[in-house]
Image 1: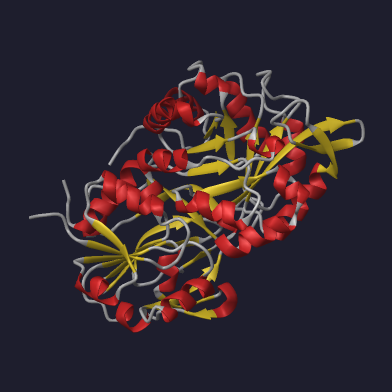
Image 2: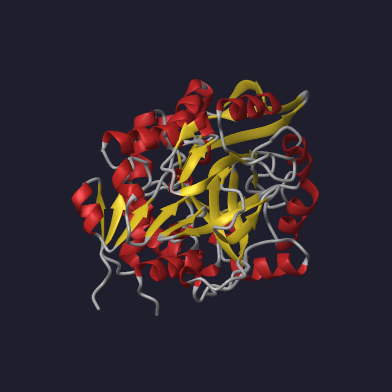
Length: 244
Length: 201
C-alpha cells in the first residue's frame, strides 16, 4: 500500500513530517512524495525536505517530480530517497530511463504513467501536474510500458486519469490490460474511495500495490483498519501492527 | 558499554543516506568511511550497496579495500547488493566478487506471479536461533528491492520466497548478510540493526 503526498512548498515541511510519521505508524508500506508542479514549470526543485523526511521514515520512500537527469536522481537518492519516479521527463527523453537504470539499478527506477481511455485504446498524458499544460503524449500506454521496462524501469505506477479524484474505484479494466504487458511490479493509482476498492484491485487486476492519497489524507480510511480488512479478505499484506 | 562503533563502507552506492539515518534514529554511533584503518578498527562493519555489482566491485578495488574486507574478523553485515558482493561471483555482468561466502548470486527468475525486480515487503522465515534475529518472529515482513539473490545453502539462516526460495539472511563465520533493507523495514529492521550493533533491548 502506498501513500501519495502532494507536495508543493517547502514551508510546509513540518506538516509533511508529521504526516510521514503518522502514515509510518499506521502501517503504510511505502510513501511516495510528488512534486507535481516541477515538470510543467520547468524548474529545479528545492530538495532539502527529502533529507528531513528520510530521517524520520523507516519504510521505503520514493520521490517523484522534476527528475530530469542523472544528477537530479543522484541528489535525491543521496538525500535519502530509496527510489525515484520519472514521468514527463522520461516521455521527453526515453533514454533517461536507460541511464538511470544503468547507474542506480532498475530497482531504484519507477515509471509514473498518467493514462486514460481514448476511443482507440489507452493513451499516455504528459505534464498532468498543471491542467493548462496537460497534453496527450501520442503514445499508447501499453507500448510505453513495454518500452520503459525494456529500457530498465523497475516498477510502474499507473495513474488512471478517468478515475483520479472521483473515488469510484480503481480502473480495473485498464489495470488488467497493463498488467498483461507489465513484467515488473505494477502499482495502481487513481480512484480509491473505500476499502472494497482496494480489495477489488488486488483481486481483479493482480496489482502489486495500491496507491491512494485523498482517502488517507482525509482520514476517511485508516491504514491499519484497511489492512485488517484486506487480511480478512484473504489478501496478503504486511500486518499493520508494529511487532518486533 | 557505550555504543558499538560501526563503520559503514562507502561503497559508492547512491542511497547510503537512509542507512545512516536509520542508525542515527537508533542511537548507534556509525561513520561512513572508505578509509582502510577506520574500517579495520571498527567494532562492526556494514557493507551496503545499491546499484550494479560491477561498479561496486570496481570501486572497492580502486579504494584498495578488497583484501581488507575479505580478512575482517569483527562482525560484518552486508546489505542487499552488499550481500551479493560477499559471494564468490554474481551473475550480474558475470562479475567476480569478494569471495567470502561460497556461492554465486543468481538472477531471480521472472514470472507473471513474481515480477523482477522483487520490490516489496516479503515474509521472511527462520527456524534456527541466531543472535542477529533475536526478538524477530519468523514470518516477519522485510522490505526487498533486488533482482539477484544468493541461493539457499548451509550458510542460510533465513529465507524468503519469490518464484523460488532464496537466502534472506546468511551467516558465514563472522560475516552476516541480509538481502532486504533493514533500514527500510520498520520495527523488524530496526531490531535487526540493533542486534547487529550489539545493542539488544
